[in-house]
Image (cartoon, rainbow, N blue to C red; front, side, top):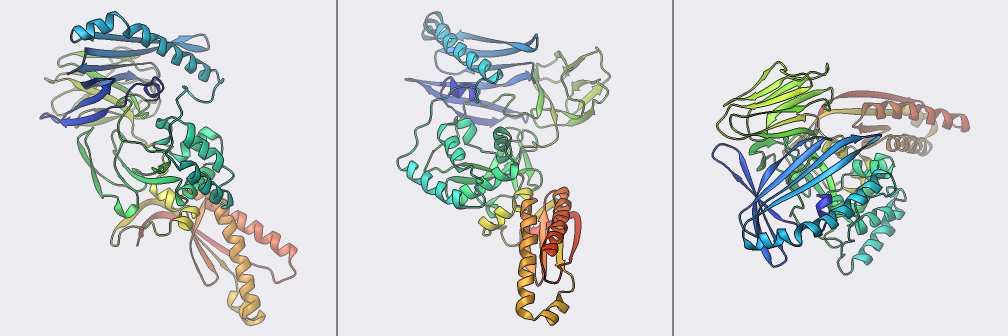
Length: 502
């Protein structure tokens, strides 16, 4: 997608049509100058970090086929990339195009992009490719400036507001149309919590919009979206995988952001439907014709638990390749059968069915860059800024694990009797301030306060444990510097499953 956007190739509309055998056919439609072009998008074949092959078969327009192949070869401390583009004419216009300007102009454009990729690989530039800055809407500068003032005055801005504004103004559409805070934090080299809080504050100030994405468990694409949790459906259908699936707030409900439509509009058209970076959890995607076999090198596969499945709906099997070996896979009518590896270093895919089958080897784990719903709602910034973003009445949010903390003041009843209501209440307020500061700094969220007790939640038990230590140390420092009666805190932690309800 990023390559195609930088090459200024047109965006296109995708139509997915379910077939009688359960598979899905993909069709694209775009306008290139005065010509309207329709084609069938053939699922891309690839071995991650090694090669990919992408083919289009045209229904209208001057071309019959267009195929791009990218191969990587080891070369000293790095590698050499070889990009091959082949095309066949569909009519006399296509013949004229291919025999005159098509290849020379395409080569000139792609050579420039290859040079930019090389500079990025060497660390000489911050972006993979140069892109043309988008045209922002009239009045967007004023809206951004107003939001930046609010962000700079907030405790959640972390002095990152100008950087976010520059990101929205200049970055490619691929980077901004679905902003993942954890990925952006990694890109900027700043703490995850700072970027999460920044994005939440920017959404509160209308610089960003929020999207709750219900991800497909197979392709991990966002097949259902909502602007609020109470609007998110319980189930969804993935047209790409042709399956129905349910939501799980701790696994496949992700909070993402996008630029305000009043600042930088976008649409749902694609720069590229398929590709290894679109589905980074897939290591191998390989189409095998009916009755055929294909063998590939599996040396690059990670030593972890992997899944073998088909692109089409159907069975799946799991393989632990800790010892470096990998079984051969055989597609049958209603199953994937594994057999001992026939050739060392190679995995063979065999299709015994009467139709083409696209084999996939992927990791089952979800992306580490996804900010899941259970993580998002346990942030203090979310509770402060979006306390009205609640579940619909009667609905519930199942959270696989959360750590609950209770902190209270020892002997508070006696304290009120000995010191009087006013002095005791002031001490309780200082207690709340110390505990609240530690909770916020350790990625927790205050759920409520009751009397002299604080109830907080943490998505990571380690954060809760470190917070408890921080609270004890903070009270020790407070007591040593105060002439008042010492504050003694009692802290309890518990980790387990829970539900959130309205």
